[in-house]
Length: 161
Image 1 (tube, rainbow, N blue to C red):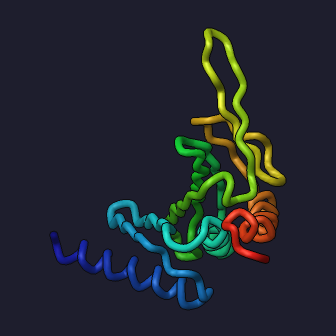
Image 2 (tube, rainbow, N blue to C red; image 1 turned 90 degrees about the vertical axis):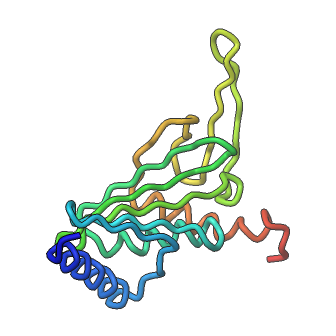
């Protein structure tokens, strides 16, 4: 690796660490840095689904030009992907996932044409999500989902509220 790539990597890492400290952001469980594109991918995998979704929202509140996508997939899992840029121009991709049920949602099955069964997830405050499709969401919709899921999670986990 050329020396200038090392300096670029160091600069990106210092910038990301500074961003985390400046905004007191939760540390991601996984961080992938790309020096050619000056971008960073952060993934949140630890803690409850609600905590992971909240962490992504906290990060995106500090970014410019954020976009959010929700995908309902296998094992009744919802995957949140968000993108944005820091004030210094570093592109950030943030991801997390969680169970539909941990997020206070429900799953429905509907018979379709040719004997296919279609699955749909409904989450509080969001349009119904079809399996294997990505829907765009707003920061406000996701913030309402997190707030609602925080009230449901203790009951789902079997813990007294």
